[in-house]
Structure formats: C-alpha cells, structure tokens
Length: 71
Image (cartoon, rainbow, N blue to C red; front, side):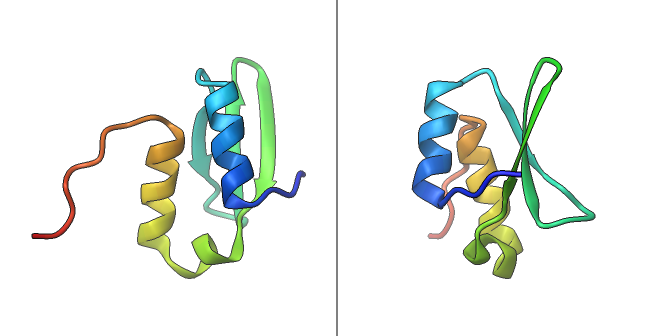
C-alpha cells in the first residue's frame, strides 16, 4: 500500500490515464486498476471525512465529466 496526497494522486492519474480508480468499501483505500495491476493508496483524511467529495475526486481521477454542482 502506498501513501500519496491529493496532488500526487492527480499526477499519477494524468501519467497513467488508462487506470480506473475506485474506493474500497471495506478499507479506506483508493484502488487504481490497469489490466492485471492493482495499486492501493491510503485514502487521504479529507476524503475519509466527506464521502461526497471522495466520489467527486474519484470521478476526476477517472477523467469523467462532472455535472455543474450548485446554482
């Protein structure tokens, strides 16, 4: 398991755009999958505290378009 802050995770996501990111239900880790390779990163405290922000951040790591939030 690797440690990384939010900025480092964004850099990894940009360097490896084919990785698919998700969060583990059982543990507070982020999972990066690319083919048969799995990388586990400890989830930063900010994401552990706010489940909605964690989902938004994972969507950003997966390079998904986010709907406009707020009015």
